[in-house]
Picture (cartoon, rainbow, N blue to C red):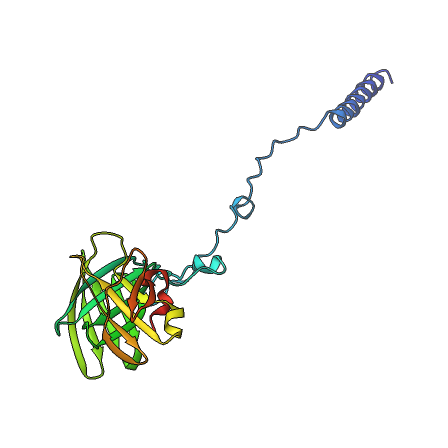
Length: 244
C-alpha cells in the first residue's frame, strides 16, 4: 500500500501539469501573419481613354476644319470693290477734223463741248473717274477718253463718224467752258464758248434754231451783245446740268 501511494501522487502531478500546459497554450495570443500589400489592378490605375482619333481619309487629305468665316455671321465672302476716284479738272484741245473741244470735270461729273466756230456744236455729259471719261450726247454721240499726266486723249463718235482728239490741262483754275443761261435758252437763244489758253475764244450761238459764230463773251461779266440785246452765259462747271 505504501508503494502505490507515491505512484498515484506522481500520476496526479503529471495530469495536472498536462492540464495547465493545455490551458496555457489556449490563452497565448495568436500571431498574425503579415499579408502582402494589395497592388491596385491595372483597370483601377489606368488613365482615362484618350479621345479617339478620327479615321484617316483614304484620299490622304487632312480632315476638313470649320471655316473661320462660318464662325462669324455676316462675314463677306469677297473683298468689296474699291471706291472710284472722282476727277476735277479742265482741258481744251482739237479733234483731228479741226474742231475745238473743251472738257470740264467737277467731282466726277464731266461736260464736253465740241464746236467748229461756225455751225457745228455738240454737248455731251457723263462721268470722270479712275482716269477715264465716259460721256454721251444727243443723236447717240459718245465720247470716251483716258486722263493722263496733263492731257486727255480719246475719241468722239457721232453716227458712223469718228474723230480722235487730244486736250491739254488748263494752266489755271479759271473756267474754260461757258454756256448761255437757262433763262436765255428759254428765250430762244443758246450758245457755247470755249476759252483757249492763248486768251482767244471760239463758240457757236444759235438763235431760233439757226447756228452762227458766237460773238466774243466777256468772262468777267458772263455777257455778250447780240443785235443790241444782252445775252447772259455762265461757267458750265457751275451748272453741269446744262449739258443737254
